[in-house]
Image (cartoon, rainbow, N blue to C red; front, side):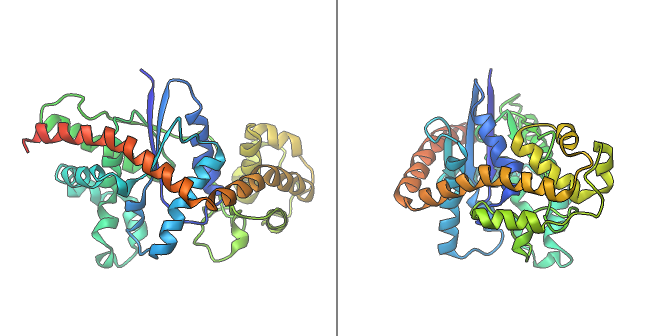
Length: 333
């Protein structure tokens, strides 16, 4: 049996290089694999754990779809839909919330990080969203889920919920326990201003990230100003452990060129950063700028993007509603 892959991306708007190299590029590769079924979900229900401006939110949903398509995900071959349009997600989240245990959710480090010191003021949605994530995955019998290191714990929770449901209702293998798909290299792209922090749209300085909407000049300027250290380029990979900025920039270069880090280090060994940055900027312009143009072109055709979401939701609903009916029978509804 082939792989069944489910992956979700939050429609946060202003997608950047970290989103592309850490997730979307990987999705494209997976969608082109033989004997692999891919479901790509714009997880708009997850996004409302924080306040959203409705108009901006709608645009962000379309922008995420446009980015998928511009990057090379074929909407005819793969299912692309937004979560809120398939009611099975919300229903399954409630049912699985009755299976999940407080102790399991209390261990989730992401909630502790996002809620901060005053967790009493955090929404219940922020606390329980890993259960919704489990519902997203389990409804489609996904065998594999691409996750970053920060989401690995949530996938473990999903597996625990699946196993507990199967055991409680004595339905062996009803819910498939999915395996994580973790990119071996460069899944975490760091800030251009601080190699120890993840690239993020919430960082104040726009110079900290390459946005997928950036112009050629903006890309070149940001790489020129990217933080480095006073030493020449490293001569071996081991040197990179103490040089986060060099490691990040070489990681970006390697990922875009589809070569391993050792090869990139060897190519620029002992050279000046300025020479490397020129090469990196050119690779980024060649790869990201055409993507930027294609995203803008797609965003001008809202009817086309909305149609993809409607068709995707119909396909997703066909699958998810069948699973919900089976759940109803098992539970005794």
